Amino acid sequence: MNSNRYSRLLTLLLAATLLVSAVSPAAALSVSASDAPSEAEVGESVETTFTVERPFSEYDSWTLNGETNLTDVTWTVKLYDQGGDKLNQTSYDGQSFNHSLQQSDAFEIEVVVEGTVAEVESFNYDPPQQTLLAELNQVREGGSSDSLDSWAFRPYTQDSDEARDAIASAEGTIADAEDSGASVSEATNLLDRAISAFDHGNFENANSLAGDAEESANSAQQSSQQTQMLLYGGLGLVALVLVVGAVFWYRSQQDDYDKLG
Image (cartoon, rainbow, N blue to C red; front, side, top):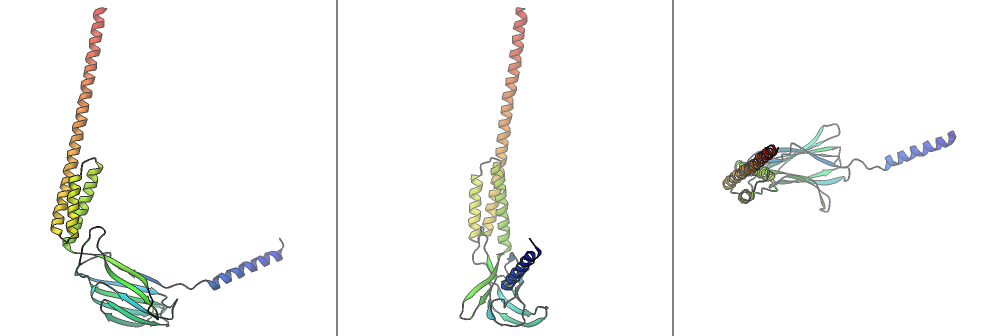
């Protein structure tokens, strides 16, 4: 291949690279969160910051909508340019807000939600109950809407957390006992009742039943181990008797042989 053919090939490759670069889409809008809790106690104050980058990568104008299940809520919307300088800041009260956005120098939007974890209407052990920390939506002209992202967490009370821990501990103990070969039907029944009590919000009863379930599993495991030890001891005794009997038989055979000799 001569140098002219190499040159043409390099030219084609360069042209293809430039074409791909020209048609590649701009970086799309993205959303992230910092310090979003995975769990929080009822009555606790929560604050989380959400970041929307490149808000005008698809639309020149749209409305940023936010929703939460927190109470006593304040939203703060901050707009920043690409250099990190703040362009604007607006605050809203309530469990939802709408903030109109127009094409500008805004490269990044921060949404800070502050609120209090509300009372839990119903509890669930598995899967754990969840409540909405925040959902951010993109609402366009005409009313069509897309969820940008949503975040949830597990709300709890001191009593519910103690009951949850007791149930989890009982589950582990029952699993260990079952693996050892113990019969855990009674413990499992008590555990099911504990979970049912938890789901109905009766945490004191759930805690007590979980403790009974764990105690039952431990007793079953100990009983199983004792049975196994007795079994092994019995087998060992039988083996010893057989060995002793074999020795006596051997000696009696030897005695008979000596008499014949």
